Length: 498
Ligand code: 173
Image (cartoon, rainbow, N blue to C red; front, side):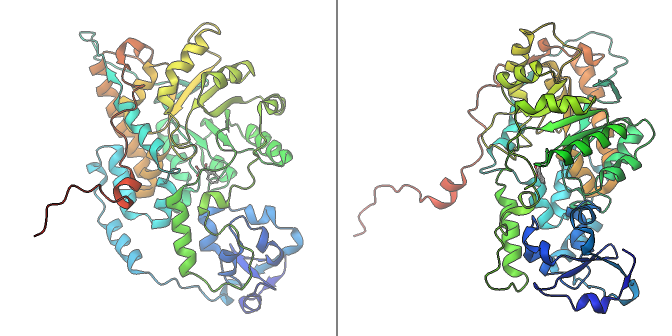
């Protein structure tokens, strides 16, 4: 890409027959790519002949277009002085959200992780909130993830001299100041312009481990470059249909010092997150003029589904030895839900599993990770000494409090993943929000461990919880939308009117 192109020339290519766009001051001919674009052609055509950077940035790694578009379609650099600025009119909704942003509670008045969620909901653009907060189908599992922790009760021990308590530990051989790692969540720039880097920087300052998502808004290298020397990082992996791409990605990560590979196994197809899907639908309905007969099948699929078509649904247990052959990193399967699969993972030589239902975003009415923990620990105990230093069980989903973490640890978890909690922290307050979230969790650990009578994480034992109600799914079921809003109430016998 050497030639300099003027904005006026780019503007001449503003149709389906010849479509150029500008991204990060580079000009690309995307005409032949329109129908291949995972997010559909309509959104590209909206920016035909124009600068698409603002729309591109939150949902693509910076190098996506360079890596995916054949080199002959890279037209050149644009002379920035010649590009007419696409002035985005602030809508009433934008103004309302900006006012809320300006009126956010001061950080020191944020007292728990729920507070971040409330602020994020108020200040995020509706589309971002819909993507982050949505879960699959009737959103029963996402609620259950919280409810399950509430069905576990503590059995605290007293008089144990809890003057000093220590909740630091190691996770997969890496030091961690908390029994928590930051779990992968995609598309961080929908929430904040610095995206995942908010997490990387806060994690560096506070000795927390971040799991880098395959579908981060920042590129993998940007994130690793932002880390401090020796800062431990994990990598979440979506396996590409083209295994050479996956191999290169994994080996590059290992070379850059990533310590563990968390292969996502619960998403051969992405769940239907209806809030996200409806948001896309509404937007498209009001959006650009589209040409007749356009092939645009993905218009109502939501952000995540649109960019997930590369994920290989043929992934199987047969692939595990291949992963072992291409990397020496720890291999962890993220999204295991049964003792049967836990044993298969163990026998396949993996170093651990994450009991996860993907934050309630995949198979709705799946049980919570913490509920599955009990049977899975029992099954693994039949395979050898426990705890097994060579096989870790992690749990994620619905974790918002140190007490949730301690419950999972008491039941046999090695450590716990927090995804949305930190995502909402940086969506509402950037890096400082993440640091505040870590500080809140630290304060909660201190108090809860004292009150529980555990001085170290290894003193958090099964006898400290009563999980007898955990298997009961009665009670906290969410309201039934269909019943409450569509079905007519049953009538009563009517009195005579005359
Ligand atoms: O849960 C998700 O949204 C997710 O994992 C994902 C998968 C593919 C693309 C974007 C996000």
